[in-house]
Amino acid sequence: MAVNRFYLMALIGIVFILGYLNYRILEPFLIPIAWAMVLSVLFYPVYAFVLKYVRSRSVASFLTLSVILLVIIGPFSYLSFLLMKELGALLDSEGVKKLTGFSDEALFLLKCGHRPHGSRILCLKNA
Image 1 (cartoon, helix red, strand yellow):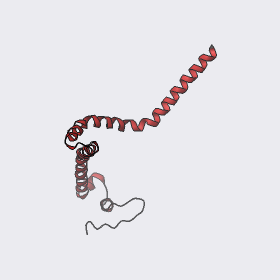
Image 2 (cartoon, one colour):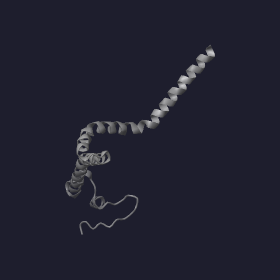
Image 3 (tube, helix red, strand yellow):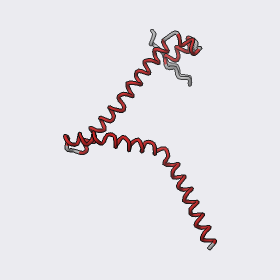
Image 4 (cartoon, one colour):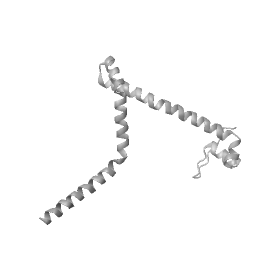
């Protein structure tokens, strides 16, 4: 009877260890899967609306996916454009020297996109 209890406890321990290792493997995928479920619930009414007019499920899916991409990627691309524009204006301003303590040569290399691994890039922005 004691031997059966040992095997049962060992089996339960092995199952827990394998379950934990399985969780560790699947952990990077859990957040994207959760976001996919949220977005599918959120945009299902759009899909149902498009499906009424298109009558083809694959075309309705494609159109809904296009709407989702426009709604999500559109504002983020505009915000990244504005951020890059502001960063460029910050690099061009004189106050950045005081703020960072960079020399004129360092700022020139930053503006020209100099890569620190040794490649030289000819900068013609201010020419």
